[in-house]
Length: 471
Ligand code: ATP
Ligand code: MG
Ligand code: MG
Ligand code: MG
Figure 1 (tube, rainbow, N blue to C red):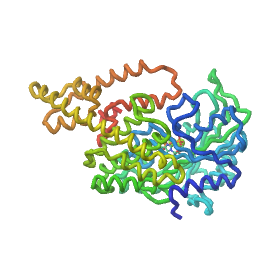
Figure 2: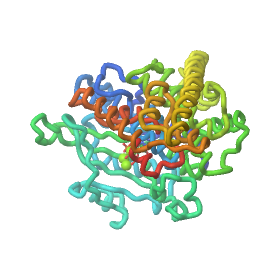
Figure 3: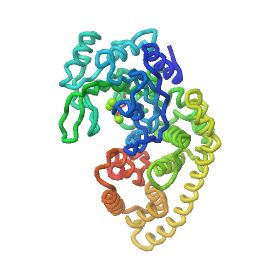
Figure 4: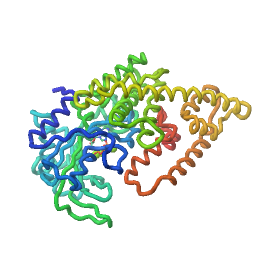
């Protein structure tokens, strides 16, 4: 059974509808009435109003397919098989209704029942929190999973500060030894991670309240919050090596291929560019459809960096003009059945992206002129471009550091990288001091800050020391 991405989404909603869940629509990526988040980053993020008791749902059993943006995964994109900055999370939720046992039963039934997904149960592994004897017992005795396929992991506790929290249990799919580092398929994952056991579904059992004073007390009404990655499910069901090889992405890759005249799959390094570009265009298209616009701060800055990052990667494919806006077509075609607003706002989205691309291309042109001056200066001296100059090119002219380095190499010169890194550190220090403390979205803010690093082009040197430092 080779379901399409759209069919998997439908099937998930249908399964839980058949089990008396109410379907909650996919909410916009830009949070409504919630300053704590930059973007909606999970299914539960849009249901907070139910979890914190502000609103009583008509039905305490809820299911959704929620668009999500996670900027903290940006450096994984293209390097692992499974990460995106934009993805869809399929989730079922219980607001004080069913708890662990039913949540686990539903998940297992949906995944292994041949009337639904029908995975071979012997390829599934689960993790539980070491102290969560209930979850262990349910997997072991009620589901009947062998003990060696239930792994106790300390980190399995969902806690984001004050509010509901609790242990979680994750389900992994074993894709076999071909997906391990060093195996033949490994070059598809330049990130060097073990992609054999793919995490597909996270079941969170929120049973405690994390109090202001740091103590934990049992919640009077316990909740269930789950999240399954649609693109990952599609990669397994469609038997393809990465999320990018599913039908949720291939039409975008085909369009990139048409534009660049370069073949996807021909070389692993160039494939990274395909993956990054196809990822970023989905994020930007959906974010703009939901009301965000490129700018110099907050959400807008994320979009600006994503577009620039994709443009940088497009150079690897020999693309030298604005092209991303053309990719909005396949994005909307793939998604419009469930997300009509991308199609409806297509003309606007294209215009926004095209403008931004052209602006960046102009910036690059200007940067090249400044580079020429810097180059002359270095040639009259020791053939080393100073850290300050490289930083000024980046910071004032938006000229990526990787480019300065590339150009310098072509010109038989080097760049004072240590000096550049020092300048970057100082800038980050200034940004850190400026950032208000106690930001509840610390992770995203941190990433946002890091997005200002020039190597948002991770290039093919992501494992090198400078890349680690710059990220
Ligand atoms: P990973 O460990 O692979 O980074 P995670 O534990 O951070 O995933 P969760 O926060 O548990 O992910 O999110 C629930 C589910 O959403 C995951 O099990 C996965 O299927 C999916 N998911 C999470 N992050 C991403 C992402 N960046 N791209 C695609 N799918 C994702
Ligand atoms: Mg993660
Ligand atoms: Mg995980
Ligand atoms: Mg997880």
